[in-house]
Length: 357
Image (cartoon, rainbow, N blue to C red; front, side):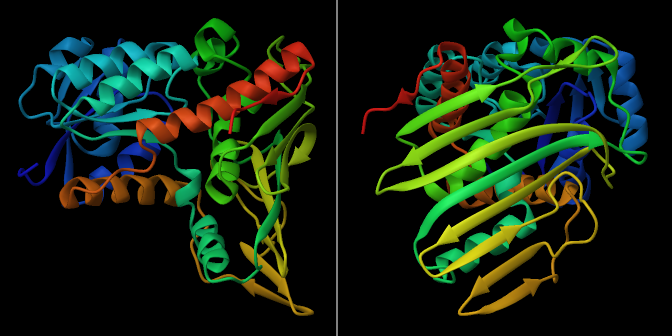
């Protein structure tokens, strides 16, 4: 890719697009040139809010893909539309950044991986949590041997309420209530992709997954897949779990979703804690390390959730310029999807899902 800045077309201008746009709006390496949404007025509103009123606006994906000034397509659509849109973008010769989860089934994922492998432009499955600054710091500490060999990972995802959270459009909630469109529940499968990606990032691919996924009906007759717990084993006698809890009266400080995320990684020599994901409970240190009888806290890093989007996009733009692979590749995205789908299958069947070595 020789053109700088890269021309970016965003497909789907719902709530989350505000976070995806940040780095493109401030980077010298990428520039938003087109927006596509079936509701063109929504795209027009985003363009005005972002100060890019000169961009092309369309409600037709094919029209956006035909534009020669669009080099990279950022696909932010409901999950069941991912495969078709991504295959079209790949066939049009575009660089692709596809919102997680990549697809709603492994059969779809296999088709996408095959298309990505045959493409001469990079395909990225967008995952921001592994670029969250406290996660990056924890990963560096682990790589430096701070806790020895990682033996277990515990992830707590706690949804609640918030007076400062952003408004979520009803349409964004509606399709997530339909499993044929979402592929699974809003907390364990959709948001859970971030948590499975964290487990995969720190511990690798699991060998066994077992899940209990509950259901809580809310006052507006929507539902959340909580309270839930997913347990997993990794090779070499390592373990982990994801606990998903909805606390309707728990006040969470956030500018985004009313949710707090906490991670504990135990190693052979020490323990690491990562705090402050979507939001926060109180004012804990972003990262804390216990080793050799002492607790060390790390506060010298940004903790806004938007930072993870900025750094994920920045990494991709640099990877394009350098010819290095994105994170996640389509094949890596399939690994995380398999992890998430295994939890859904285990909860449905009541049996442990075991993967071949």
